Figure (cartoon, rainbow, N blue to C red):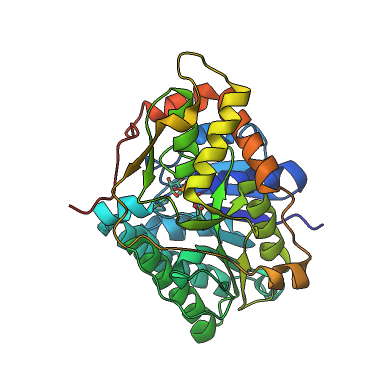
Length: 354
Ligand code: NAD
């Protein structure tokens, strides 16, 4: 495989760091991470690859047009994978401004910088260049008890987060159709796995249950999410970045639909088995139902037939094996999440919109 130069925005985040580990671990490509290091960015998620001479890091804000132009001109990427975003729905309810700035304005700034860079490339490099925009299935809104999201499902975002991601998807599509920028796009279901910031359901539940703290479940816990292991997502992203058809979008999902309450119960059972604690007792009794998230989407489910058919991608982890591996990872990597937790976020409830 020809060596390429990959620029990864948001590479210090949960999914971005999995992509960087995948790229440096199994290819000859060079990687430059561009990340502002917000509360969600963590260079400790990249320690396993940061001494690789093919790895580089730039601390920069994607809304900073001057910085983006400079970085693109210095690094001269063949592939840009855009993952930098504000990503937590609850935070978008409390403070949508940052989501508008990073997810919409930041994507616009990056597209303009990418366009300028792409136009200046030699014909050969120009034809190989691609801008890969990473997005979420939440742009499609909420499903009833049946049906799936397809690539051509109409957009109907319900939260400030999903609306900002939907806007960014539209910008990327428009830069392809209007200016010819070579883009590929992906929309993925909920991810879980190692290095997940402990404000999201799975890591928050693991850590609270481990420590015998209450396990908050929104509403009745019947909301359904389609879970995908982050390493399966990283693999899918790599395949799309390398081989996806320009101008196309691909849905990525695990065919792993679970209610939130069943996910929390499964984590309780795994911790009772892997880290029994007599003082805490059975973890299920820590479950506490709390006021639902305003506008909480009922169900997400992805039809991932297109990426399987066209690129041969299929998830490797089952939810059962992936969740067990994830719980074990949090047990083995206490230092990572204790350091994360000692920063700005201390596990408090966010996003009640009062
Ligand atoms: P994350 O919050 O863990 O990481 C986001 C990263 O972006 C962080 O490292 C942060 O420092 C960086 N960042 C934020 N604002 C920035 C800015 N203005 N400039 C530069 N860097 C900035 O998010 P994640 O869960 O890894 O998600 C990555 C991408 O995948 C996002 O675009 C998200 O919308 C999308 N996505 C996430 C999921 C999921 O389940 N987590 C599912 C589908 C799609």
